[in-house]
Image (tube, rainbow, N blue to C red):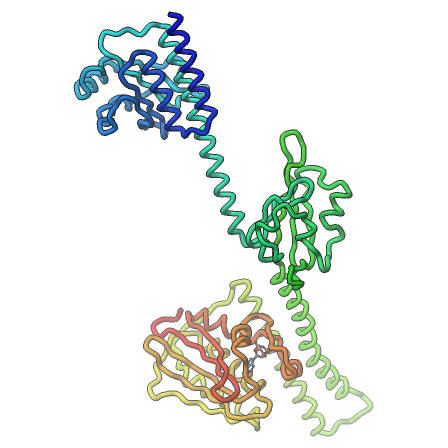
Length: 519
Ligand code: ADP
């Protein structure tokens, strides 16, 4: 009897030790099973865990050949989830008869014990014994304490799995985030820093570890009043909600600069002690550029609007002077200037309206059959008389197919390209509008012999507000919206447009529309 008690205590000690050691869950469960089975003079044991609402699966076994585990399937069905305190497996005797028939002697008697965490049943422990052997109430009680230990082991392992999975997920997010992310200790030394931030600062991920925040985040200029160090000196952070935002130009180790905005968020522990500061570093170069482009656009548009308005105003007031009697010719000249300038104004306003429709998504196509060759002729005839330095020719193959599209908008595309060809070849030269038929598409190109474009510029000029910075562009009217509208119209037709440097000089703009549809 004493001996039995000592063995019980030893087994429990072993299990407790196993629970707190580094053993895997499977090993701990097997050990619990082995101790329970041996101590009770049993033959074999099984632990079935609840994997989801209704299904139980065998997670550990002892004394059973793994190839024979399927024999025990009847013991995995209809296990009641409710109230582990009054746990009874329905029809256990009948189920054991089926098992015993297949498994042979030694599996006639069974004890089933619930593994529960609070009121939640997470599994069942089965211990099998020879026929005729009896379980003393003391044994059953003891066995239940094993089952409880097993429940704790499973619970801990699942928590651990969950925490590990959460950590892996978080690590992956941090590692692959396009934003720079850095975790700081309360003394502002760096606990970790991700790849994006390593790229932004020039500090290696390992090298930055344990470095001080101020060594890595160096401002070459700052628009925010306080940086992190100054804010901390002033008592930041007060609580979880105190978020600090610092914006400015960050200095890279190579001495180049990058515009960034850093959001610092404090993390407190249960006792209200500051645990970490999480810093999120965002590259705001694009945002800044967009802001600058917008400001430039507003000043450019104002200028472009103001020029014709002041010319109109000047002529109108002059012609309107009461004390002067204008002759017919002067009157006519003055009125045609007003007429031309009003057209320019109307055109600019149309362009601005188109852009705002494009942005709002209210830009609509009115599709029908379009003959691009005829459209090109029309544009050439419109622009021909406006320039004496350029010769505009149209070259389309015979029987150029019709396509579906918005005739007015496609006319606008060709007009914009031809008008640019004239604008950006101030010395004159030949401008050619040509068409070619591809397998599934139609192409129209406009080439000129003007100032031309580099490959890099070709990629940028279709962006909103983009204008190549050179003396000619600076002296030429324009707001950098023409090609943006061209691209939008072509894309709305399911097509594409691109520019390339001309073969000898100048540039070639080509747009392509699918033959089959209207996009
Ligand atoms: P805008 O002409 O009003 O500036 P666009 O969007 O039509 O605006 O053109 C954008 C920029 O592309 C122009 O500022 C110019 O620098 C360049 N560009 C357009 N067409 C040509 C061309 N045919 N040859 C050379 N540069 C061109």
